[in-house]
Length: 119
Image 1 (cartoon, rainbow, N blue to C red):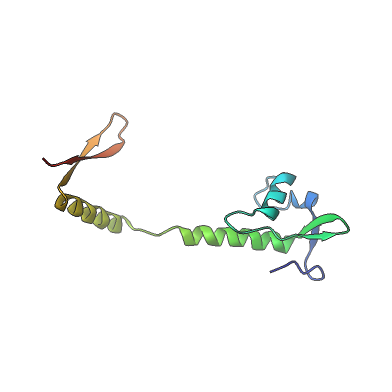
Image 2 (image 1 turned 135 degrees about the vertical axis):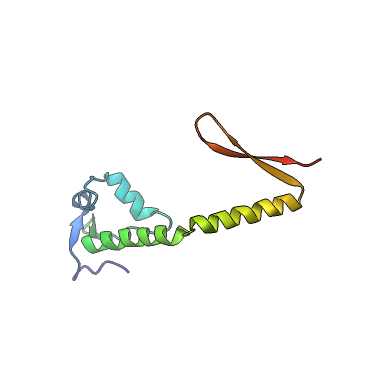
């Protein structure tokens, strides 16, 4: 949705640097990168008025909402029991292929799985 310059609150790019809700001031280069390239296909909406680049508070909100919606959609929700069933199914499949697995603990309690081909 493009910026509606009559209804939205326009702010200059230099003012937009401090308009993000995380409290951290963004660099001007970052805003231009978000305008031109975007993040994962989502671009910050801007308008050019009299040679000066503007965005709006509403455009910033849309940008952040779109980015967070992508993050939420990209994360699959898998419970521990689902993960366990998937692991058991994978081990069964490997066993049928002639590959066994053994769990080995390292000194830092990192659990690694070693797969050895049956001979």
